[in-house]
Length: 96
Image (tube, rainbow, N blue to C red; front, side):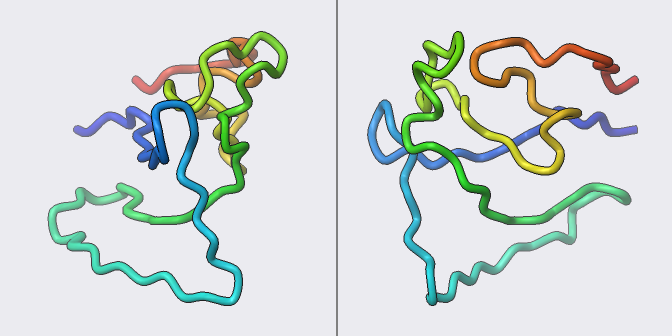
């Protein structure tokens, strides 16, 4: 049995800012070996829009990009732990 730990990869430009990919009207391709993924695991690669500084200074967020803050996508309410520096714990149920 595998547990989902909500893994994500953030690419930093320097110690305090995310690298901002400029992909408009450009192609991005990558080869990924998914032969070792267990059944039901998500092996997707995708981009989401984020503030370059990780939302540092918004709400109670004093951490910023250096600590992986500022991320949010369609899974945000169920998977991300902090939004603008506040714990996202309403109706939070951890994986078994």
